Image (cartoon, rainbow, N blue to C red; front, side):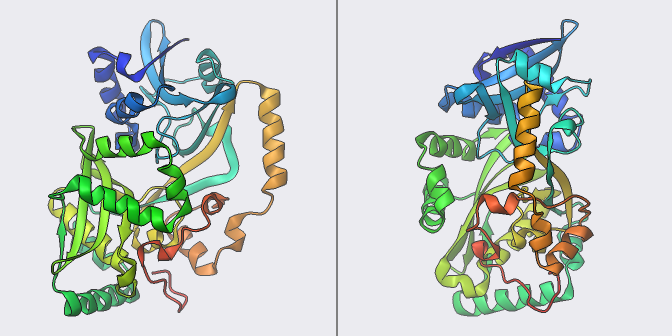
Length: 377
């Protein structure tokens, strides 16, 4: 096996064609975060962005986009904004440790890799395979909405009617007429509330990357900036990237003065309804284990966190350290109805410590009301 490391902009038309072909091997790899467009946009702003081109017998079998940090440690390209990452390949067997070594890295960390990628399965952290919630719109919006519990539909209808009585009919501007302005307002609003967002955008390259992705219009990655209105009053903003009839939710904010109306729930339902009418069959809410996502989701898929270390000794030592540090499963500390909801969506692994990455994020993030009667949604 041969591994050649290049900058993203050094990939030519033949590599681009192969990348697009490899993305077709799985529904999950069609995700825009795994697209060449995403990788190349990040590469324009981050000098440490690279792609490992993996060949076998003179034939390219896979790509691994990454960023090289200090001490020769690799992370997913676009870190920490990349919500799905891993190998983009033909499906041929790959020795992940050998790839990482020949890419000149000491190790490569990942935190949102499709669990279906068998190449990375031996390197998953214990207890950190979680469910990434999605809104499945393949049967249309009404079918999706009817799949929600009676309690969820009742709350959603009540909140929307109250919002409309005060401000006017709820509507969604799918493609904002002022995308740059609305994106800046979204980021400003979110940054004012969350320390994690402030830290993210303290890196000047992060804003440039997000702004260019918001304007992207490629087949494999298209940016969307949407605004939800009640009458003439904007109450929520959204930015996502889409590809192949799928939409990945990325950033969202709402007017905190309107939190009593659950503006986040109203926005996502409006987004799902409009998306379905435009041929969107899936909205990926990404793998953060925020409670509101599981109220909205009617399906999910497993993603994993882990690391590939070239030194087996270092890998074993880090594994022992993690077990000592994170000995208690977060799943055991979650409310019973949340565990039940995760099991309904197919969870068989520990939820792990994903919630601990940002303790500020919870169901209030988008003003979505959490039922207190023990129901899941």
